[in-house]
Image 1 (cartoon, rainbow, N blue to C red):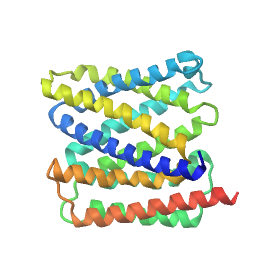
Image 2: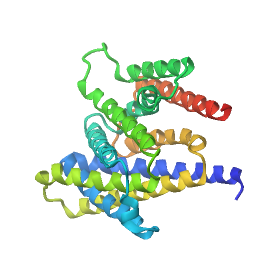
Image 3: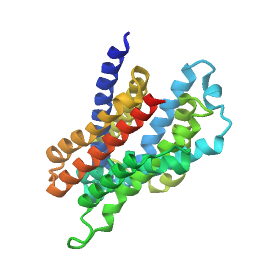
Length: 292
């Protein structure tokens, strides 16, 4: 298949991925409003761990090959960071709703760019630093500090964005020695162990209809990760990453139509500023790679 066809396929897969993840977030918002966040994430991780273990088992070398790593502490830490981020983000849904939470969370590529220097030793030029600054002006527009009474809850999705950016950078760092399959395996297993340890005490009965939603949540979680893997197999990450911002669009539709949320003017303006700044940092990173 020609590379242009691969790119088009990658874009379509990324759009499908963002839609599935948006649906997943909507279901998470519903379940977390009825049950403890830790229990919801724990059950989701049980399915996720079974999913990554099954994939590892079917590949050459089996589970032993997938689990083999020279940096187990790093891999475990990555898994714990992601599990924590998921809990924090779902908690943000219950505090702020889907739209405002995701509007702030879209700042994570800017955090990746800002932290890539101290963590990975990458050079961040003045253009990207300017875009990072402008992007966080957008975050401030969303949060409205100093206007009325500032809600500390607005910081929660920003913490989630920081954790996800840290997870992404540690994943890139781990890839210097480990394969993607190894990192994927450790992400699911480490997160499952952590969530079982902290979530089991919060178990509570779930009505039958919500078990159906929980099953759907588990399936969409596995499907989303599978689509994401296929996306990066079909095309370069730099070519498809800008389309990841469509998740904010899909989430906004779900927030408005299902949960009757409102898109406030400051959130729309701030999100547009953040997305434009994020797209610029992605473009600069790709331009620098092509110039090497």
